[in-house]
Length: 118
Image 1 (cartoon, rainbow, N blue to C red):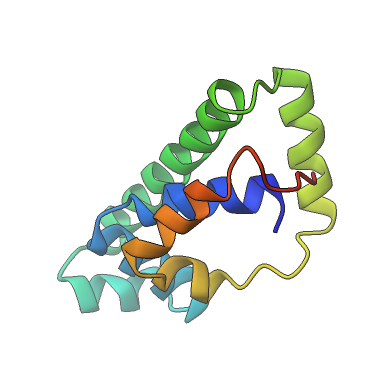
Image 2 (image 1 turned 180 degrees about the vertical axis):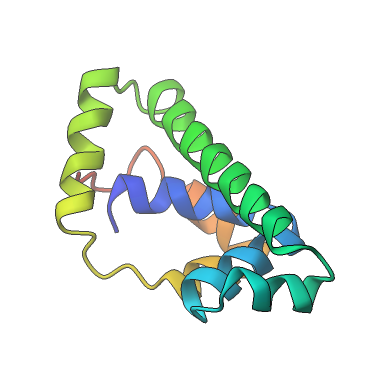
């Protein structure tokens, strides 16, 4: 698993259950904002704002961890994100979002000594 995937896994696991549910409904189940709103009792605009907030939080957390824990520069992070954008590899978003919190510790433990790929 690439360094970005491991770091993202830890960041997703740190989200509260409702935020993981929003991500799962939207990205895994391909539900519309209106459908998610009905499930959560929120207006679809509120769902959209929450998803935007969650994406920003994940991006910030991943960047912070890549910089602080792995010493990556902004240029290295940009190159890494571009590489992952071109080919995310075997990323199972459903498993990532729905992973129990214990898996986050395993991903964290895999950190510095694990093989690092873009």
